[in-house]
Image (tube, rainbow, N blue to C red; front, top):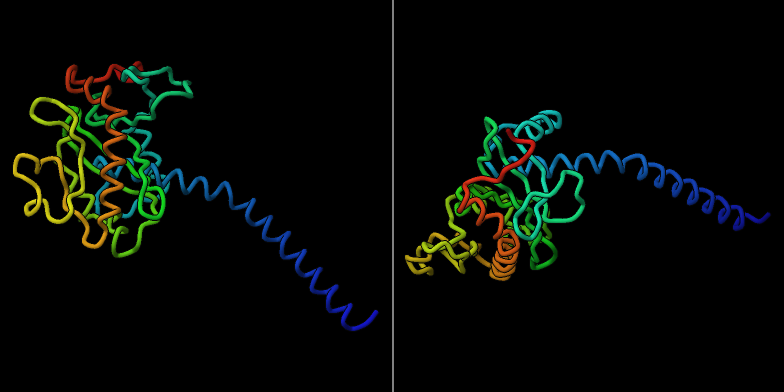
Length: 236
């Protein structure tokens, strides 16, 4: 066998061995990666309702325990009625509870962004109208521009915003094209947050996404506005 053939054979063997090792590593890490992704989503649900101290670092077990103790994961139908625990259909919804009472509800955010989908959570008080928090756990926006949606300064601006007007009609929450105080009329300021400089399209797409999401969850919000609660078998 020539030296050239030996070299080719050696390279082929090395390539096959490396491929097998990479495949094994990927398969072995898959469960670990899925677990990390789940805990990160739980962390952001808790973050959206202010259940985590901003400056404190939480371990995986702490997040799981806090989530299990304070968050109820349910599904509701198009009319805002709670579905059976084993239901696979319906809209996913999280309830933040304390002392057996629902303090706020959290809707998953899945919105178009400039470069990809934006995933996060929007928390609304049990009055069915006031935003209590917003968090983003995955996006593809440009760092320093649209990527600012993951920063505390942007997310904290959502706290206290109103999703309905004085008559109880859905208005959603929008991202202004600049500072709210400078570009939004006084009577509409409660429904907007400051925009991100240089990221007009990110703000536009996220605003549109939030409006569509809140429309879908409006029956839930209306129930909270009208009844002040959602009755659950799990909550006595």
